[in-house]
Image (cartoon, rainbow, N blue to C red; front, side):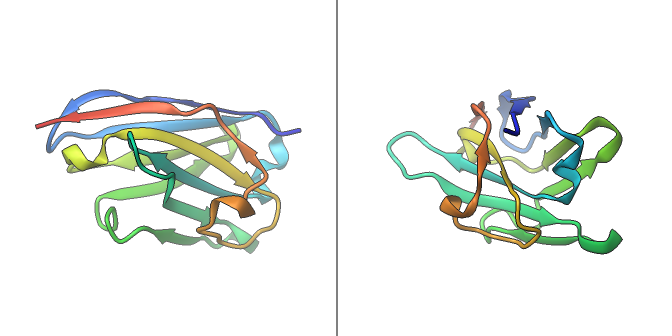
Length: 126
């Protein structure tokens, strides 16, 4: 059972930046596809970003609403995946969740992920 723990959320002004971290409990996470999702109040959880690292390459996917502003990366030595969020907007306010998929293939649908973190709150003020 892989455990994921997010951190790095908080309150930031519009135009600011935050970096979310997702620490995994297993080294084998390096073979997983990692994703970030978010859920705003009153809305369904939605895809934000995902990355897969097959054969020393990287494949990424981003929601159109965050493309060019958010970036997903990984530090294998720390068993940690990051979501760098720049140029934040009030509409980015949500609880952000980290997810892991055992299959090394990008997925943007939440039911294709096997493990989930508890979420971290990001609030962007205008």
